[in-house]
Image (cartoon, rainbow over all chains, first blue to last red; front, top):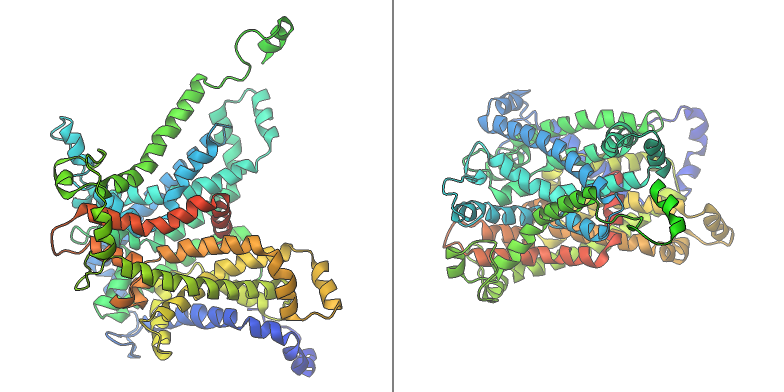
Length: 305
Length: 301
């Protein structure tokens, strides 16, 4: 990324330099190709072609920002963005709160800690497809949770999120939280373990309550852990796709569509590549917006590029 | 605490100094147990449903234990369940997944460990830049790279085949695995490497005779990470393979979410459980190493 500043000195040595470590360079070739061709090249290609009117096959008939205009005028995309927003905010807040609370509970020197940890973390080993299908079954209105509570005598009980366009996204949220909170708990627990025991002693001497110590002292101390957790949650939210496909298939109607699904539908089903490229470029933009402040905070001026 | 120390002269009397079940503790355990139930519920429901017969499911409740245990849904899910016109069950997907998994793991770990080794011991001009691009690449949404990869796979004639998917998994596993190995090899004392250099060992000799044997624990972590990651993949499977080579997750989704026919919930749950079994076994067998793997993956990935 940075260009060497002393070309005259290097030109004389260049043949030598290129051959130095040639085996290491050869062995790194897969990495170099992946970084340059697939990651950098692929992304640049998609962004470039998002300005074309490609339909079934990529073509270079430039149309400017037409695809983006059409994108933001498509109901389906607007619904997708709204869903992602609701899911994102809820998932972000709840994952952090639940993850931290569970970690704090496990950090209270309790018995069976590793058993509890295994229970909270095992859903993370399962795929989103499995997660989605199980929760689809539990939330099934005819046999699942709703019918059981009704069977207890509460005849008017209604809990049918997956078939109600207004609440379907919360049905996804229940499953998503089940799958993902264990990971955040694990990270939080590692962060809590890294905190000096003396802090707790000092807080006790000063007569500060447990909850207050957590809120006022421990959480501010764990800022880097929280930032890592935030980045993780954010990147998993943007990737949200498998869960929707398995649990609701985007329905009822279009009410649980998400951007990742929009991209794939337009690229591989609707034969409208340009739309798919434009939508995926928008996803890229949102990641960049999240990533730049984080990279800035994390690496500061330490790392170039 | 103060009370106990004044009493201590009188011998071991009164309550134990360490209170195991104070009010706060009961609340704590109560919370943890209730939350555990939420986490265990789906696994329990999966197991229970998969062991019931269809008539029992239609009349009974999802949470009740089976009155009559039957393994028929399992057999049916494994060898008879239909996806479209193929009615040979999940066994086909299982076979595909295994055939995808093994070469993907071998290839991705071999490449990533060599990358990590080169990046920590044989730095060359630009190596850090490539590495930075690789790590940034891990954050780019896959959707941005999906189509260019379709074109590349078509060009080399691997689109739709298992080997194409193996390549895709190798490429997308590279950032996190390379990071894992690079960090590990950097933590090995440099004197060791220098001593080997003085003795005249070359790139591959040092890798195979010194670094590889020392890195076995990190290889295990990498394998755990890749097995769960590749087994659970859905997105790449659905895009880069065709029905005959669909991995297990894709086939599972097609079986359960197919619109034709009568829904057989017990077969569906048996199929879901079968698909989740491999990562679950890995998870419960590996214990702490799994946590280490995801922690390594989580720090920056």
